Image (tube, rainbow, N blue to C red; front, side, top):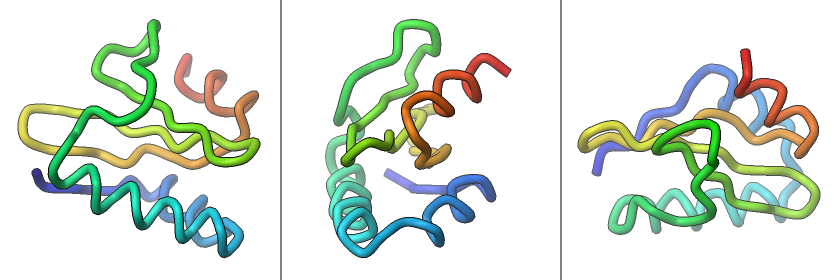
Length: 83
């Protein structure tokens, strides 16, 4: 599985605390072998969310690619997905 990140994810990742960064890095390595971690979002097909503290790590699976979308607080994630 190839993994790509959006510029939005890169910005969010730079702002994350050390524990969140550690967890995200672990999840990224897991996504290379199992691309269906977390909860699939009902209003966005093939888009998954994983809770890390009070934030959500959101990614999408397209063909043989995993696209890291963003890492934001719960309230902002779902608003951002509706845009």
